[in-house]
Amino acid sequence: MTDVDDQRQVEVIEGAGVAARLPVVLRRMQAQRVLVVATRSAVRRTGAAGWLARHTHDYFYDVAPNPQAMDVVRGARAVVRYRPDVVIGIGGGSTLDTAKAVRLLPTTRREAERVLRGVDPIRAARPPRLVVIPTTAGPGSEVTAFATIYLGSRKYSLDHPAVKADVALVDPMLTHTCPPMLTAHCALDATAHAIESWWSPRASSSSRELARSALSRLAPILRKGFRDTTARQRELLSNAAVAAGHAIDLTRTTAAHAFAYPTTAQFGVPHGLACALHLIWLLPLTLGALDSGPSSSRMTAEEIEHMLTLLGARRAADSGTAFARLLRQAGCPTRLGEVGVRASDLESMFDEALSNSRARNHPIELRRDSVLGLLRSRL
Figure 1 (cartoon, rainbow, N blue to C red):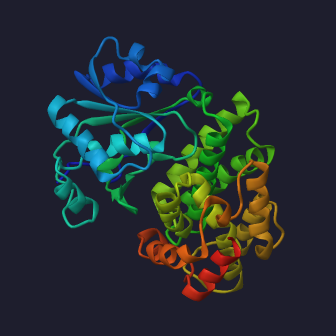
Figure 2: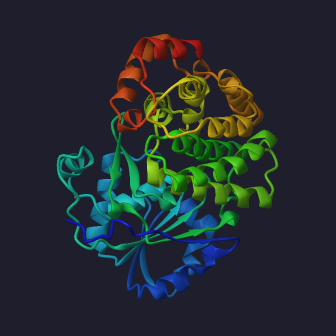
Figure 3: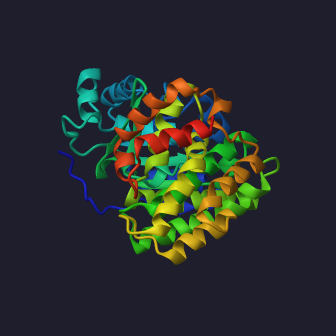
């Protein structure tokens, strides 16, 4: 088993230009051999080679969006072959999840799949230390103790304290090369984290404060759109993404993520957009139920009203319409039919989503007939 403190927190260093502190961090870690997990373009855009000039290092470039188990197994083999004492992940959420997982998964597909399915425990003893440098603002992977890995179209979460990074260098300047639509999708991912953490049955006063803080910064940026995102807005997005990431690290996500996973896997919908498309119908369903009676959520009436105000809605019944308006202002589609989902897809989408632990973390019961009716209304 891993020798990891369950309460260990990521050391987060935030601010414009902090990525250039990587050599200082590596010296403090007394790094001897460094393996960088990143795409070639991310290494080129960030100038990472310059940060590593005084350290023996190598690269694992074979990373992919929404990583499959075999993507991570190839990285695990690179870790065994190179024997780094520090792994560095540079990129978006999928790259950071890959960097987190390659330190811990076995080097055969069969064994890795058994760990991902929860059949076998993580057995890595003293894995390499991990530094992550996000180049997008939204996924929050830089601060969470889990990594999303797919087996075919089914998502699994490698969820263990050992998954968490040691240091995160969160530099909003690295997000400046993100095109507007990628920036929007990442912001929607962080928005989903904030909303879902806020209403999660596992929420605490600390996680709710993080979620509120994140959503209060994200909603105005969504309203403005992403055609001309300023340096200040990118800084706010990065800060909000970290706060929302800390929130879901405490609570985990809920049904919007559970429904997003098959939407991404089967239809190629970017993850943040997929979450947002499902929040359009989940918001009025969930907030309406929470406002009308007892539930497993700890949200008070005042908190529900606060969330509605941030989203631009007066009543729970209007929250989906208000959220769809935010998507339109961000230049995104608002209907599942616009991204290729058909009526014939909905039952399998429901079944796959409800089999995911994130759906079981939702604060209200999701009844098949009513949910299928809501999904059909979004085609």
